[in-house]
Amino acid sequence: MIDRPELAAWLRLLETPGIGRETARRLLAAFGSPQAVFEASQTELQARAGAALAAEIRSAAPPHVDALTQATLDWLDASDVAARTVITLGDLHYPPQLLESPDPPLILYAIGRIELLSADALAIVGSRNPTAQGREHARRFAAELSAAGLTIVSGLALGIDAQAHLGALDGPGSTIAVTGTGLDRIYPARHRELAQRIAQHGVIVSEFALGMPPLAANFPQRNRIIAGLARATLVVEAALQSGSLITARLANEAGRDVMAIPGSIQSAMSRGCHALIQQGAKLAGSPQDVLDELFPGRPLRSAPTGKPTETSAPEDALLAALGHDPMTLDALARRTGQPPAELSVRLLQLELEGRVARLPGQLFQRVDRA
Image 1: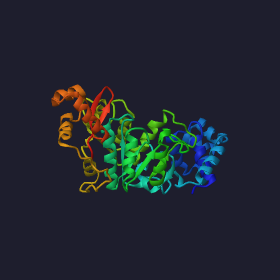
Image 2: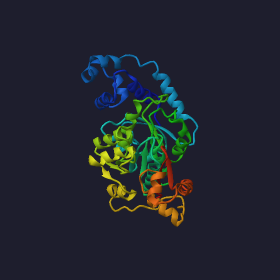
Image 3: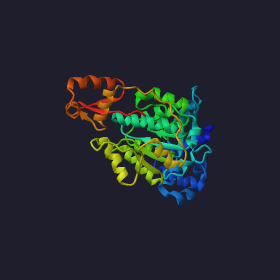
Image 4: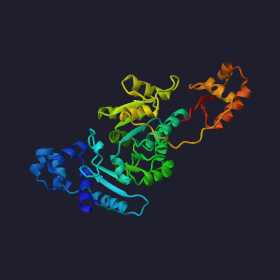
């Protein structure tokens, strides 16, 4: 476990004005440790960082560093159902895949099974406002790939991220949640229970110090860690302007595979995935496609799923007529030749069974099961 002097030196390095991640890594490469950086002479520092920054480093530590150090030690010592850890750059437990990324964080705060940080991992990301089909895809892909031994990485956000975590928790691969806040805060707050489950059975990590609120600028930084921990990134649903595409770009820049699930040409949530495929991302039509790309020859294992709901012949015909694009009741009536009142009854039954989703604008969309 990290001791107080070492932790204080790391936090002082990170909190010193003018020192960003790149400069900090350059100083560490030159001097070997944060303690050595602060013990270096003005001349040595000036040669590596320039006169102004050397003077800043040689000055007293920022006044809040002592309080932050104590708060972090108290957090580490707090009684909890899951282990709490601070992992620094160069630590034996530092994730090797992340170390090989272009911009590895200098420090990681973690709650849970830190061994998962070094496991074979797949990032699954997507929209915060997905379609019903997108939620189903995220959870099914995560469950089946976790059952095959892959650890699923995502960002604890609403929508696709949450479904990916939930699916992955059902398998031995489990899940890693990368947050954009300090680990003493859960964002969004409605994911507090999910975060507790991940802390017990997976691991939650952040590079942000305790007390860090959910600032908008934090989330693109978080996305590079999601991409960096994983061998590949799978985008389930994304609009053309979305954070998921940032994660995909970061994965590509790190030399990692990018995959995307195609969707309806009518859905705005599919346009980002289609753009990625046009740019060279691999099309993922099934969990086996993902596994074949990462581990050729490895078969999927059975993933825990709910028992499929049997439907009658008329309902099967209705699902076939509905297809996979959102459709209005009137359009479905024209396609099937059935009265709208009769269709409404059948659609409600299918909706209750989880086979059909009711979308805004009085649209209906088929939801395929695993």
